Image (cartoon, rainbow, N blue to C red; front, side, top):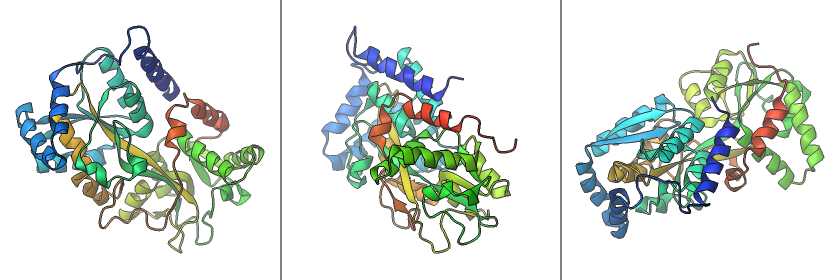
Length: 370
């Protein structure tokens, strides 16, 4: 399997190649085809008529839709079922990690073979697909509910993965919880905290936050060395939560709050909020988004899925304890958290720089369970 850095380098080369020599975008089956005509027909209508027209057009597409996503099965399955119940369109799902989703989509585009209609995954992979001009523009009324920071030219944030510490309440007692990212450097956490091995985007955001708030680079480097000296590492946020739930680890330096909330709802002794119910640790909301392929074989259905993920799908995300990208009645996923801006722009085109820095920082750190 190719590394994350290699996959993003490949995506960058494809994008560069699309702009050189022959000119134009990465070749897709959609160039001048009926798919673009369907999107154009929907977009030409007044916004209040677009959804109904998309439903009419989707009836002629066979009643199926293909989705590539990095959502875990326990999330995408109920979402797909809810979408089918609402629209009558069955969703064929290919799921893998975000890098695999990107790699597969790029390879199919190179081969002029459209394998998916719509993609929902991490922001970095969505940016790579957008850079390669594979995504069609959506301008439906559902965009009106999305914050400006969640809107991009050819994709839109559907949900937010919130980076924040999580801990086992049996092993981290009230008053022992971290009050800042800096506090994780305290020797009291020696051997008690776990880092996820691929969270370079979290590492970049914390670093940038410290620098923006007056720390020098030398001070930041010293803090990271102390945090890493206290830590072990693990691969995967779900795996980390299993360790935390079982008491094999005391605290995760970062995890997605929805994973913690879902585990707690199932009775696990875990939380991401102190006893006061309000955290003073800045939480970073990383966007995951949706985009519809120019080369979609079922473009009207792709449009409907995109639209639904920003409307009815938002309510389904709340039911699953995820953080929606719009305001949804009953959503409590952000209660008690203090959000800091997530650096989408800085991470979108860094060519793996932060991956390499984070890998170097963690070199030699012990793995949980070994």
